[in-house]
Length: 150
Ligand code: 4NP
Image 1: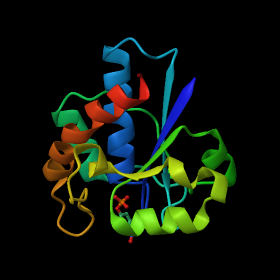
Image 2 (image 1 turned 90 degrees about the vertical axis):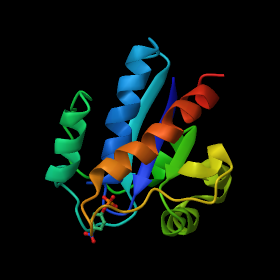
Image 3 (image 1 turned 90 degrees about the horizontal axis):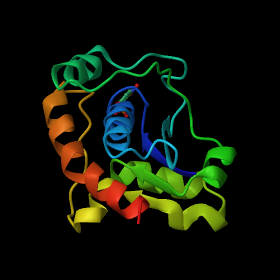
Image 4 (image 1 turned 30 degrees about the vertical axis):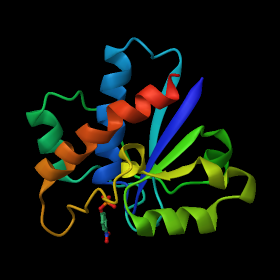
């Protein structure tokens, strides 16, 4: 089993959307026995909370199956168990690199790195543009799944 963990600041907007969208792709490709998908926060701000209502509405609109979720902060066990750890923006990456054991730092990547783009998955927390989050994640997730299932 290979585990991919998506990480954002709060684990209520971008990374749970990434998790649920990727779980859907994994199921479509019949990879449930091979690939595990999780999501985590760098911060403690939203621990225990459900995904943002805007994230849930966007996933529903796009027919992505919803999975029960409560926000969790990334742990040392997560760094150890993951094959890939995908951050949404530069702040996530610098926080993750500071938190990770040195042996696990190479697992950490910026989401758009797979497209060689200097772009970030922008935070919808302030402007509620969850359709932008969906669109941006749709660009990169299939490519990360290709990489993980190689
Ligand atoms: P996320 O969005 O990192 O995509 O889950 C945010 C969630 C919570 C906060 C900021 C961004 N916050 O400041 O509590």
